[in-house]
Image (tube, rainbow, N blue to C red; front, side, top):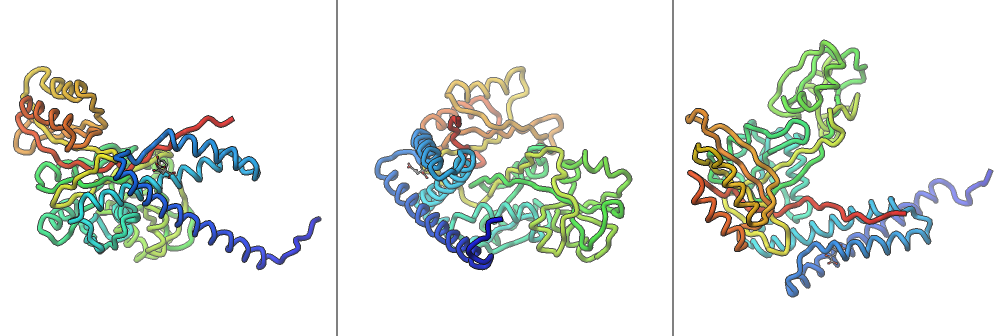
Length: 390
Ligand SMILES: O=C(O)C(=O)C[C@]1(C(=O)O)C=C[C@@H](O)C=C1
């Protein structure tokens, strides 16, 4: 057997040295991304340049081979690095475009308590924005909205749709009646686990605590557990808090493992969602709308109600098609107090300040009974540029 020339401690010191060199290089690359963004303001070039990304990835894969680093490894690392570069540039450009909303501290309301998925989404959203969060956990989506409306919070974070359980109706209904604008979105991976306060076995669990959404999203696994009681809580974090207080081997919470750690809970079973790819899209609301620089992709959300005549919704949707605007979401919700009347929520890829979108709004105004722009905000989803690997 070959004996290492260094002790484990010495080898680990070397590993740590290489890691800190990697960190310094990542920080240097981030700084270069900001320089790129500055140059793009001058040249008016869009942040995203897929042709450049393709060349860069192909060169890195070839160079990686010389170091015996395999292509999928290189590609996955550089997809993350490029995603970071794009999001850092977007954050930088948005700060310049909206100097009034660039505060060092942001008071953010979310469905609490601390550790909820909304809390994780808030942290994730502000992570690249050089903003410290003043956390304002709330008891309901209504309260999240209200405290932004009355000025006690600068932003509210609200889950809007999940890849397994679909739209979050309560949030859509809040949006119908608020004067707030949507100023951002973030997609958060949802990784549900069964979490307990003490070491125990799954067979001992006779009562679960969680928010209604995770029960829906994990329904198949939960059915396999048989006769286990399900208690409803206002959030996954409240469920975790309760289970932590009970310190019993017979109860468990469903929620995220890193949030569970905040409450001293340990995962007993991971990956329990019906779909492996379980993501929730969150929106950020604020009292004032934001401007989105045309160097980055933007999304606009409308609400509208149409006349109740045959084909009136189709007429509206044709407006988007005729202007080459891609619709990414269409949702309908009943109008409270007006039975059988529907309010349509439409997300499209497009910047409200563009001439095309202004024409769209004008045409829709003439076709609808009511229309309001809920917000225009940057798309933060950076789809990876794929290259052919041989
Ligand atoms: O070179 C650019 O134009 C950049 O914006 C930098 C960068 C990168 O990080 O390498 C990021 C985004 C672009 O799509 C291409 C490359």
